[in-house]
Length: 113
Image 1: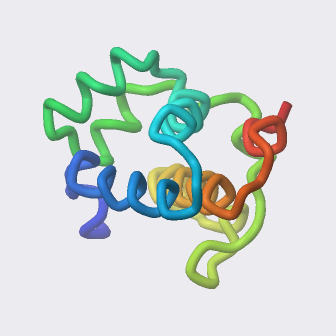
Image 2: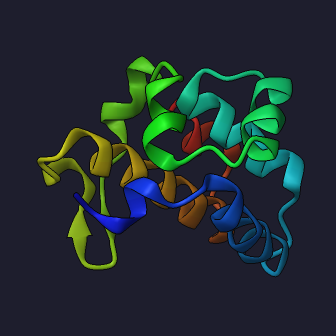
Image 3: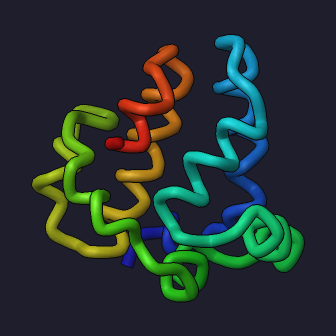
């Protein structure tokens, strides 16, 4: 089991915020991306962050977007579509979406619409 599985999402979220804001994107856009991936509403996302939910519980309580399999590419040198552990793949999907947001990719493309 990877250590990230038991890490609180709320402890990583500020790093996501910092990453996207330094590149001119907003917290609202970050939340939209996270909600798109997880099927959570913005209120549910805030509740999960306040509850210090682990990544394992966070993804267990969410429904992955059916288009998540369209997320491809590398994060930290690992191709997200080739990650074998389902939970790790979901975490890598999230990392990839945050990277795309920070790199200025249009929201329509990030949300695979």
